[in-house]
Amino acid sequence: MAKGPQQATGQDGKLQEKLRSSGEIPRHIAIIMDGNGRWAQKRGLPRISGHSEGVESVRDIVEACGQLDVDFLTLYAFSTENWKRPKDEVSLLMRLLLKALRDETDRLYKNNVRLRAIGDIAALPQEVQNELLDGIQKTKDNTGLTLVLALSYSGRWDITGAVRKIAGEIEAKRLTAAEITDTTVSSFLSTDGIPDPDLLVRTSGEFRISNFLLWQLAYSEIHITPKFWPDFRRPELYAAIEDYQQRERRFGMVSEQLGKKHGGDNYFHRLIKSVTGP
Ligand code: FPP
Image (cartoon, rainbow, N blue to C red; front, side):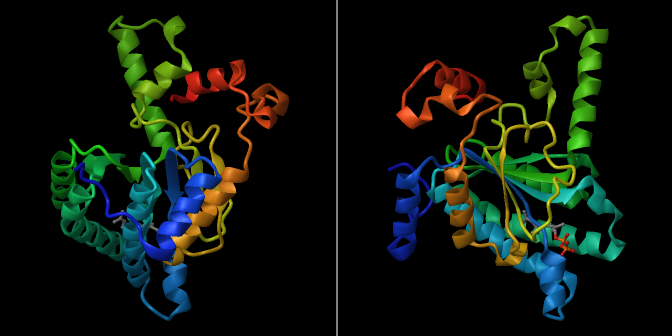
């Protein structure tokens, strides 16, 4: 039997079944995990308790996404700007990340999750880099959910890197300016090979993209919840997916062109599939 996440049972299994039958499960979900500090503050706890509890949410959401056959889950775990936080908080966050990687890699492996990371990984403490690379190596042949951790990541960092690499290709005369298309740009981003997110979730009620996947979110549906990240567990994920299922994704076209009302597999559906992948 193929390895995979332990399937949901009981009431949770029924909820997942209902979600599957009510519409499409997004292929790629990206999440801005926000509100850990406020969650802790509300309880009179140190900020790091919010981050710790946030790891529990990560565990639950990764498991639920695996069970729902989501292909990619990208988590904004540490942004380029987060380095500017007080030194103590940065160092505690790095320790927490290290511990989570140590504790969770085996579970990820058993649940058929493939780990990947995007961002300036070389900027992370050496121990974190080693643990991360071990986890990526260990899970590289897994075929279920791909968990993408955005670490020391920002959208501008990603785009700047792509521009630099493209300029290098032009200098080396392997590419001409006229040959650059948006597919070229995508292929030089750190997310090369990963389809653009279908759904972006942001917790804690803020209406910002915060320098996340700036290029890749061009056509993503956005779901914003007032819940703080430590309170975001699978029921909140299911609500976000339900919200997504109500949206009509037009990719700049008009409703009639999609032929959705008639459920037809028309030219425009095929066109969209050719852009977004199967
Ligand atoms: C935002 O809350 C959260 C972060 C900057 C870090 C998220 C990290 C984790 C959940 C733990 C480690 C992650 C993994 C993948 C194991 P905030 O501190 O900005 O909250 P605030 O806006 O209320 O201050």
